Length: 293
Length: 302
Image (cartoon, rainbow over all chains, first blue to last red; front, side, top):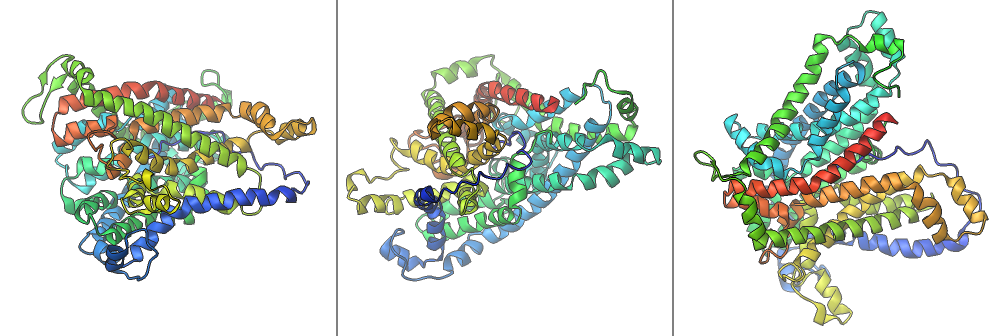
């Protein structure tokens, strides 16, 4: 749920490090960083190990004991009776259309604002961005009412809609910045050749935006997949809850089955971790986007 | 970038006429955002002046909700907790993130691995983070076991069930996730600083701390503004991790404005009162939203 940011884009490439070897201080660096990093990943490692331990082992020796027996019962229980399997599928059904629709609509708005002389376009752009910065709390109650009056309360469609609506401002702002950096000559040439605005959008602008679309896509995927508050605001039926919300329900039902709770949180964490490792570079540049580069 | 009022001729030709289909391109997303964001936001302001349980019509009650809020001890506690949260969460994640960014700035062996490990938690949802840490905090969990192992049994406690520690226990988990994010921002900021200045200062005999304080730090002003605004906005929004770990308890000791608002609105159906809390959150966030927007405008022009 992190607020997205706008930071100066990194300079082209930092100049090569000065060629003075710092061997002497190298080991100090690693002596500090290696334990610190281990400490940092320790909670994750611990939860993963816990997820694979058997219930009897945990019951007999406690969660923090050295593991003695491993098994998949935690995962089996979490995916089956714990409903995490179903919830994963729900999350996919929400995340995929929400990401695609967000980026599609945002690219339309960004194209209109970046390439045409729309009166007050800067004000429109900043207003849209401001919408994304609002604390969701100010929207929760009215949004659930709006969904009710549209007759889509408690449907996945409602969840997709609110994700798209709430994220649009930021995506538009970022894409706008990127589209402005595309040389005017390119679109001008196409226009002279007789291309209409829709063709220019589809044939020139969108293909050139691919890197920023990828970065935003990676970012949006984790945001939407990780969401909790919108899901519990517009959904009521337990069977429809996506992963994050289902995880919290499961925790209530398996109070002392730590292997099941751990397995369920690993299940909820794995998809975003995969997105992260696959798109690591995009992901980081996504976090830094919004600049005029 | 050229200003909109006096564009060069070539640009004007490209920008002047706005075809109908382009208006559609703008209007559809704008309407979605108005319907899902701005219209609800305006409604919250109206609802904050009413008493409503969701059935029938909302009864206008003027400013009563706000008067009641400031007499409400749970609300004041939540407000104070939010201050602690903003300072603690912001302060610790900025200090940690900045220190790590400085340490991991120059390329050398292992840096990539360290960086990835530190910003990995950022991709987990706050709810997952909450559960990861709940496991550590529980009575026979790692934290108590480690404390016991180094002879600090007296410090052991039920971290999340103890009103004295619940808020801080949740805060640590939230910082763990946020540090990597702040580090990424500062790494980008450091990349855009001028390395020759640093080298020049080193040649002149400035120590590492002096170089950071007087050469690097002033160049990070832009990033600082962003990090500051983002951290405060994030801390006012914080909901998921508290909801996952304590739900604001025990005895409201880890209650934040957002969790209290959610309880009032969705558990007790005091929709007017909950809207009033939401308005307070909005007002507190407003100044930081503006800071962020001003910064965004500057980048637009740059």
